[in-house]
Length: 193
Image (cartoon, rainbow, N blue to C red):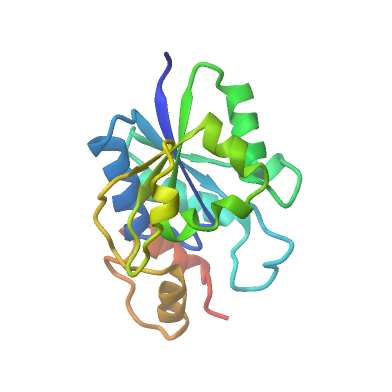
């Protein structure tokens, strides 16, 4: 059996301390060997100044995780048909890394919507899902699924929306994002219309 890798999908707009603590916790406090952060491409439905370009967001993720060999940034969805569906990305990753075993990482808030996803039944039969709690969310009917394991990861209620608002208003984002990410956001003028 190959390595067990957790997959954390997100727009990471921008990546912040909450994402990093969660990814690192999953990579070091569970049976996973690593966590890969999969940066979602530009969605045709989210075009606008709020969502940074995919390459810029990937760059911020790479800066954030530099030096942590348990975390890796992936742009696998950039070359795939849009919109990207989780099942298609899983199929592509299995094709590229046949010896790896992939585990989906998701918040309880996303888990309750999983039955509506493309090929949801296949996602649940072919993959384990490690679910982390979210404030004020309870999804008991999905948590009972044998593929789902609830992991009591520390909760940090930080939102990328809040960080973008701070940047726009010229307020400090120190400690909300890694220092290298903060430097790049300010140097490049992201979200400073």
